[in-house]
Amino acid sequence: MSALTAEQAGRQVEEVLDRLAATQDAEACKAAEELVRVLMEFYGAALGRAVELLGRPGAQPPGTALERLLGDDLVASLLNLHGLHPDDLPTRIARALDSVPHSVEHAGFDPSTGVLRLRVTASTGCGCPSTQESVRQAAADALACFAPEVTGVDMESAAASREPALLQIGSGPPPGPGRRSSATAS
Image 1: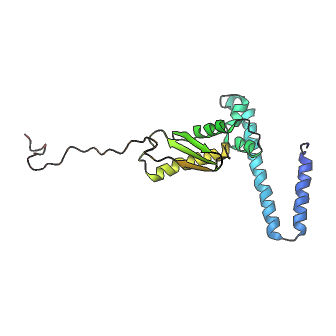
Image 2 (image 1 turned 180 degrees about the vertical axis):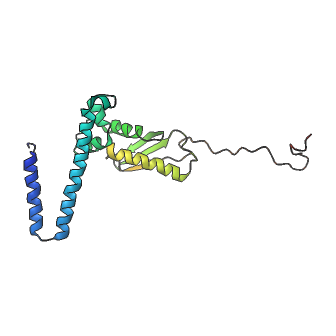
Image 3 (image 1 turned 120 degrees about the horizontal axis):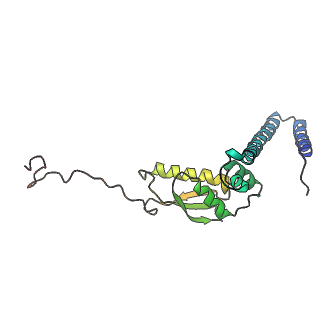
């Protein structure tokens, strides 16, 4: 199958939209036009980002041209969408996790369910469920771009991720019978 030219693709889109308009279903026509607009915006943004990454020698991040493209979430998502990303799944998962602003590690992936298990490797603050959820959501967002095969993210519990328990430190035991407070000990 040969690649379509821009002119051929444009003609095909117009033909489909015309066939849809002939049905006189205004809602379907509106939805189809919206779909075309959204896809054009996505492709335009990804291609614009690729040109930006390749076109300005002084403003480019370090690495080869391909590394810069593969490291960009917008360009990587377009490549993944079409099965063109050259990295294998474990490499793309690692790349996604490297972009997460929390220290997490891969604890297992089940390809039959698409679920990736993660473990927090450094303190994420209080260890409360909302913090765990923010880490999970950040990982899920990064994985959506770099590894769309991952359809779910499970976080191991704080105990499983070796996060220390919160230790309360006070000034000492309260004064009791036979004990004097430090203020009266003189």
